[in-house]
Length: 109
Image (cartoon, rainbow, N blue to C red; front, top):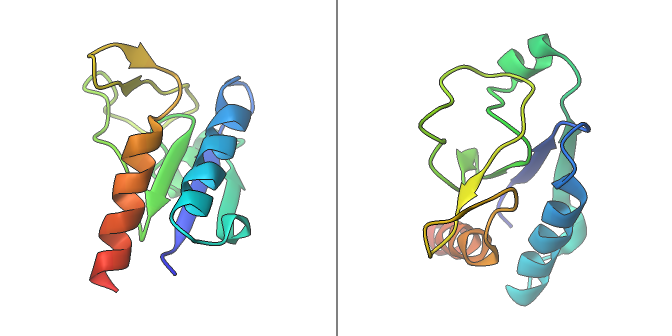
């Protein structure tokens, strides 16, 4: 089972929906959706400690599922955008991106 971390900042409204999508991806891949380590980032110090570049952040085996947005260069308490297949930006990571990261992690194990 890959190590899955879900990091979020409570002031960003998309984290509940993003966590639900992550759990859906885990279920679709036959993995336990309860195996996610959920980490709430509350301070700038925690953002630095966890190398948190925006909410939500999902890491599989320590690797972010998406490249960092080009406009973010420092860890901090902020909301994050994800690029969809059609080029638009969304506050939610695409389900396909999560599934791809989970499959890649499972293939390595």
